Length: 213
Image (tube, rainbow, N blue to C red; front, side):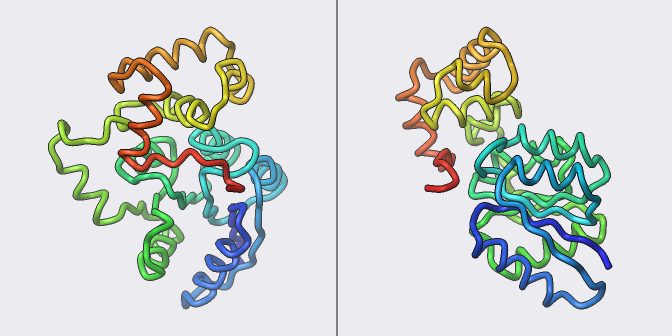
């Protein structure tokens, strides 16, 4: 029996995913749930799983920083990222970090089921929308796509209202490095203040609410 780990801080999401997998014919699976970044890391350190389906924004370690830790602990794990964040910004970065697939939380049950089946089979999954986005003119891209994975994490934390010192502590980097990331983010986005970044994030639907909200 293959083990499935479902990580999301919302109970209804975890149960909904489990029910979708149970409707997929074929292998039998056992299920475990994680409700935070720390809970997810703890479970991965203690046990092996066939597939992980995980949100990016949960209490504790989150975002691409969390994905990096997951892949470092279990490099061979089949990981499907399920997120409210826009695909054109996060999908390709998640795959580059080692995830096998990325799907939006706004996707239909049919799309989510297909993504799960593909990742379970050891394949990579990208939605039709994301594949089309890769073919669009780069000048039309969301400006947040220019940020590196670590810059995206810093930007997300800044948008949540955390100061540079807090960001540094949360990501395990020093304050000067966090300040440097902030400067690079502003330069890449063509902005000069957090207010401008807030406005830009709303325009491109970058989610930065805390998971409990």
